[in-house]
Image (cartoon, rainbow, N blue to C red; front, side, top):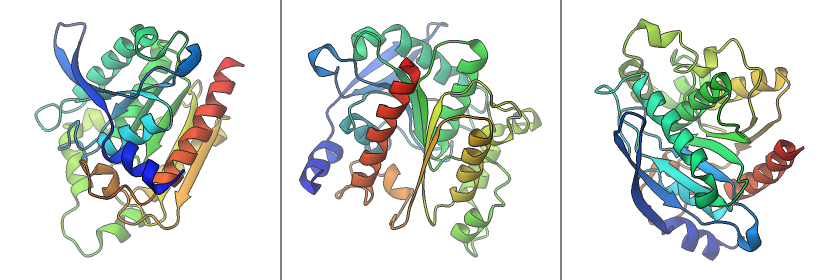
Length: 283
């Protein structure tokens, strides 16, 4: 894919802002990217969560990853989930799961009949995607074809070598602070939906794509989760970007003047994952 194609499709992705209702009658802002597949072929339908260390970020800051997903052929529902500390765990997960149910209910209208369903997110959003994936497994609905996790925040210990190296000599750590505000109380620290890295039961999960940078703060915890998923017998596609300038910050930039440095490679990984996971789900 040429640089021009990446710039045109990712820097200024077409989208539609709307709202989706929850079971309690609350309205949640969502942003729709992409379109149905051509010739009657359904598109992958992806529920997406933006990053921001649980305490910041919005639909605009999620546009880079959502745009990449749409460019790779998906119809994307990006969710404006409630932020902490005003809305600690489990509220963001509850909203996320309700939006997953809403997306699946309307999947024919959104992405075509029989559209395979995915969850995706970057950084804190990847944590929510992984947690919602666990919820869908336990509730046995809706069926998921896969989860896509970019630089996922999965472990609140904030003590991995990759995170310590990224934080350097700083006395404050935005990820540790974000975890503290998201978890709220001791209950959150031990709940697998809040801390997927601590989940003891990984059976029944769908295929997983994990992408990190080689100097990514979340490098170690992401690959550790990938290893555990593989040991549980799941299809796991993982990719470490060796020249990931400004990763994962480049993923969180709202309408950056230049595309994410790894945009082309991300698109390749997404296209491969959609192909392999769709075939696996249909088998």
